[in-house]
Image 1: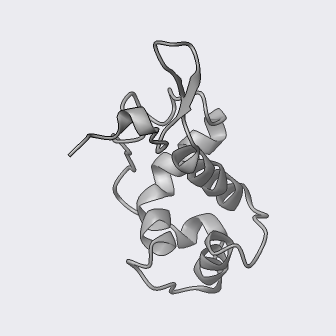
Image 2: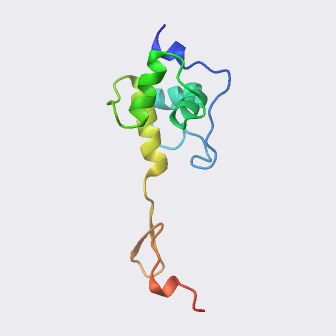
Image 3: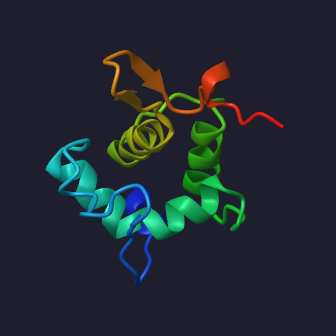
Length: 114
């Protein structure tokens, strides 16, 4: 059984929270990567987040890649790593003063006085 056959699902994977206009339109992935993520993402997401236990050696290897134990080697593993980096990157915004503000940063002026 090839690695791609091991991750077959009937549903397409959509991540409307991180990619509201679609994974393929985000500009973060190559066409091949976005097709792999959309086609196999339901199974990949379930395995990576511990929702589903690995049933094959390919799936067990994928879980180890997600955990950072093994390096990503297959196109499917590399596509999912790119996806994880894209959803976990820190976004930088420019405030009205022109200084960069990284999401999650709170300055003293942002705190509410009691």
